[in-house]
Length: 183
Ligand SMILES: CC(C)(COP(=O)(O)OP(=O)(O)OC[C@H]1O[C@@H](n2cnc3c(N)ncnc32)[C@H](O)[C@@H]1OP(=O)(O)O)[C@@H](O)C(=O)NCCC(=O)NCCS
Image (cartoon, rainbow, N blue to C red):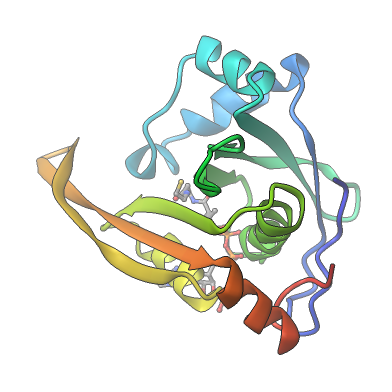
């Protein structure tokens, strides 16, 4: 599933996704524990990532970025064998932020979810305080579904989880308008 992001209006950021290997997990764990990322995610233990690499219901990818296509992030799908065809983007983390890598990776992720995994619904949740991610998912066509109020403990109190999704027909409509990577 090596796909370079190339939708017409995509920024020039170059990314490629490849399956995560055991040898990538030090990188993945260090990214999760980076103070820049910790406010927005709940880090997993190594064993959870190992399971996500192996279990068929999960897909765990390294996001390769830049000219050298070096490891620059990771993303995880959950529910890839889900009988309702409802696939979750469990987590996406990019090391070098605000350079377009997250947007480019998200476009490849949508293509994988709908084209390869046959998703009917592709969904995610994010902490309400995560304005950067919210802005990204909004601008990539994800629809706000609702909020799980004060669902997660954060420093100084609780934060809500914002649930967002895209349906297959919405993806197809965006693709017909050249807003998504082509099949
Ligand atoms: C969320 C994340 C994956 C996005 O990746 P990225 O490479 O930084 O994102 P991009 O550069 O592709 O795009 C980010 C967009 O958000 C916008 N943005 C940045 N800060 C913002 C803010 N405070 N409010 C609203 N939008 C914001 C940027 O302007 C950009 O939009 P643009 O393309 O129109 O300029 C990355 O920042 C990250 O790893 N964050 C920490 C982990 C995380 O929050 N993951 C998501 C939940 S699991």
